Image (cartoon, rainbow, N blue to C red; front, side, top):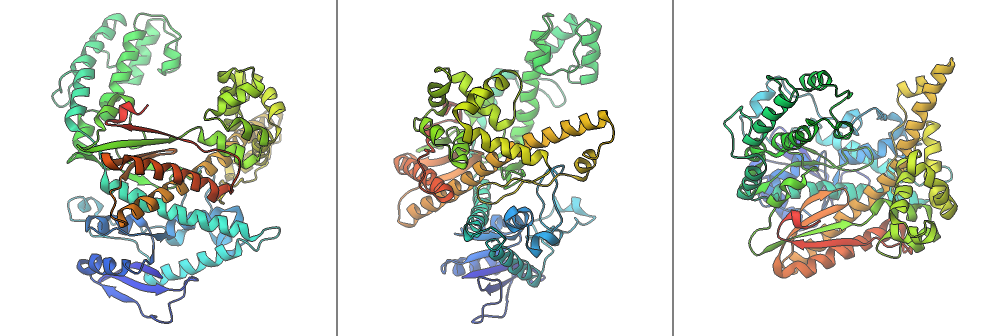
Amino acid sequence: MYLLLAAHADGAALQELTTDGAPAPSNPEPRVVSSGELAVVVRGLEERRPRWIWHRTQDWYPPLLRAGVELERCYDLSLCASILAHSEFTAHTGYAQAAEKLTQDDELPQPPRALQPPAPPPEQGALFDAPDPGPRSGQSLEELRTEYAAQQEALRQAGTAPAADDRRRQRLQLLLAAESAAAMIAAEMQHAGVPWRKELHERILAEQLGPRPAPGQRPAKLEALTAELRLLLQSPSLNPDSPQELMRALHRNGIEVRSTRQWELKESNHPAIVPLLAYKKLARLHAANGWAWLDTWVENGRFRPEYVVGGVVSGRWASRGGGALQIPRQVRGAVHADPGHKLVVADASQLEPRVLVALAQDSKMAEAARDKDLYAGIAAQGFGGDRAKAKVALLGAIYGATTGESGRLMPQLARTYPRAVGFVEQAARDGEAGLTVTSRLGRSSPPPSDRWLRSQHSTTAEEQRRADSIARSRGRFTRNFVVQGSAADWAACWLAELRRRLRAMRAHGRDAGEPVFFLHDEVMVHCPEHAVADCIRAIEDSANAAKELLFGRIPVEFPVSVAVVDSYDAAK
């Protein structure tokens, strides 16, 4: 059963659809539901296990969660549109050819213009003082139905391109389902929130920075370091938070640096460098996760950021507000389980290198990957047991670090693992030629921008050198994209499988944890103590299921390291 949910002047409009997007013959007319009735109606319809189709999960699902309604599955038109508009698997379809294209210069993937939300009203500021008015997407029921039908047609055609087979359609269909499930998981994690103990956070700040200062004042330890820097740099009024003032003071004292980055400052032995580095570290903590952050983002023992699924072109997540994807080690002790609960923190070990093994079907590297430590296995096969060298060489191959130590070790890696190295080298050559590359399930890299294309029409030797440099830069991007994108595919399937298994546990009357945090290849589940063993089993089984969904039953392991802790700082 497919149910389309769209905004309506009187609340919301519901319509049952067939799999191809046409109105269901048994129930062809839409149903209009008031905003006050929506949660009750949706709860009743959920008993029939429909797939909800809507413009954006973030528009609809959070209010339903607040009303106590949890859904099983959905189809997010906006997220799926971004994938279908740019995928190599659908490039030959009218849907992709009519879409407004994303280029490598764009920061975030965008859906086709027809699905982009309307511009905010002039009185947008007033929205912050008013109750949430509910979904504000500007598309009507008919527009969304037409869009869904067009997407299903593009998906059907994914297996009909020259030299294609139906496996392309199946992979892309899996990606759309996993991406939509990820959107639901993101909303559920925002609703649940990361368990965060405010008093522990305040204790950490007091230990690191001193007592809470008055508004507009520096904490005591920052003030003391400021006084020390002013003395050592002979600058009585120095504001170390001003990069311009700081650079002038450094230069006046013979510290010839081009920036105030840590690695560059460390090259100087001037006595001001040690307190300056200490100041920068504490200032970052104060600015990013200090008392103001705590007051803004932690409420009722929970940190609730908004996750942006597919916010990076490779498929990785981003976040809005609070720096959810950058919880620094200094404050992780404040992430603490509730009484009677544990944090189960699971990390997919060496995910991207293992994804490369599976993509390249490199049997020799697969043999090295059978042990839990892939780098140690590679070191034993080709680097005389030196794990550090093996790691530098392999990450250099994935990220395009072909100079320095990585470049020196690359020939040995290529001799030992020609298929794996050849795979990323081909992706780099494709990028340098202006082509796109595609993840395992069908997410493609954006095409080069007009600026990139113009740069390749060089007429002078200097322009040619610049064009070659720009081409190599794009090659590094595509080299990593195909691996990182496929790793993001795996992670989406892992999360979706984990959510399904935890929901099944609850449906059978068993306690289960709930995911509360996700970062690329790491998931945190807040779990009752007596359910920890079941939770770990679900995490590990989901990882194995994700591997088989992407690659089938291959001889490559995707191990997951699991830590059961009271606070996040003890996980690693």
